[in-house]
Length: 359
Image 1 (cartoon, rainbow, N blue to C red):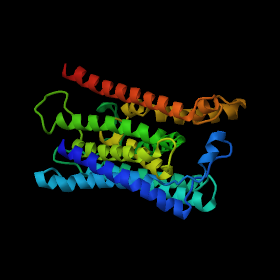
Image 2: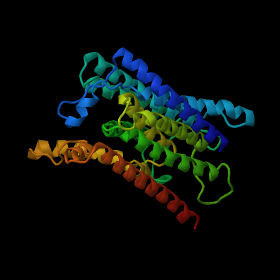
Image 3: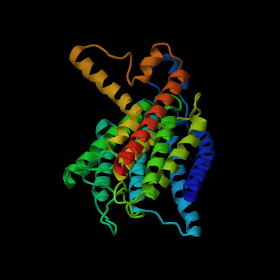
Image 4: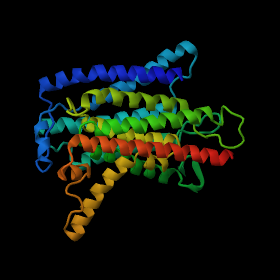
């Protein structure tokens, strides 16, 4: 628990102090956000707001994770784990892809950076590396960071994918979650605030798995077969605290945007944590807002191409409510509330499954 508190404190301080520094540096360099002309008219005043603020989230996450481990040496805590490093690496690789995308948008001075092929290749490369390595490095109990079984709150023993299908499944998860968070990052503080709640839920889940790990308890039933739950809790709290520190400056009216640098990295975190904590299906509940945002884009495109009409005034559907007359801050707060409800529901399902197993 002390390590978790240290990780949160370090990440929060680093992110909240680094973000205004990035605002000054990026403003001086002219690294301003381009705004879609077809978007809500109220967004045009945001043109030129510094972007790539996701750098602060990634740096804060790294600082919190590694700082807590350095401090942990003083009280004989375990060091970094394979699971934590794999998820951290996945998020960082996706953050680099997003950084290139943001940088090209700035250079070209338009709202298009990397082409779809290059961006997809970057996401897929990160996913493949993660998927292949997640089935390696078994510990003394034979547990690897990932499992080739589909999971809800724990592995579903009756559904085995095999290593090849598992890697393809990781491709799907990484692509879906990184794009879902990217779609959600369209209003000041919406993605950062929502991610802090989802990551907070993952701190609780991973820490509970640690306290009830099959490697630490004599429980015959109900224990969790997760390789490195405590380290995953450290990573989740570091990323969540970094999001809160960034949100201080990203809340409306935003001084800086996270850009694809932050949104792709955060989407990768959900994908990586869902695989390593064996909660791939539960993540759909925890991240229900991101799922809904991505689904609104898919539905909008599908219906328009088949029927020639639009379901929403504009997709992702947070813009639908803006164009319907809701103030931006109203949309943000109500969507935060929906995320809080989804996170609470996900935790209730997680705990409910535990109670049903232990009787």
